[in-house]
Image (cartoon, rainbow, N blue to C red):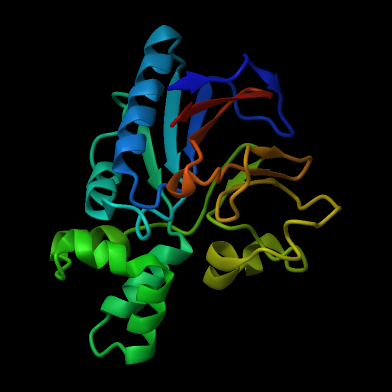
Length: 232
């Protein structure tokens, strides 16, 4: 576990007294998520604030070895006692839900397995229990705080924020990633891996490729500053 240098200027602002811990794409790496949760708990114990929210940005399942463990961890108590917990849906949860739906066509099952679902099914030994399906169904698409919008993938910058669809929020890449203009809010997202967090005036990307050998990253937002925690 490691932390980056202290607070740096952020592109947005949160209300006073609120600290947000936003966690990027886990993809079955429950070992890294457990370490990152421990790091968050230690960070909070060292300097608590009035209110904490832990936001998981989606893509808990597929590709990595322990998707069941990740789903149960995000559904359990947050690493900060008394903190609020926000769990967002990623495109891999959307694929999994489509494949597990009653009467799902073979194409949906094939698409999920092709995109990492085989590892998830292997971890479940072929059967996903109802409690874990309920976790998947209960995931939100977005969450807002202060100047920030938290989503899995991004938004379609050509549409108003209130017109964004599930496909926009869990699947989008372009033209969002290269969009040069303000978006109305600073979008915090995962979905598109990069070697290190990407901080732009209108977006912060925190998928650092944990399942591919990179770190699992947590963005810490407070006031008008930001910093990072990580586990590798």
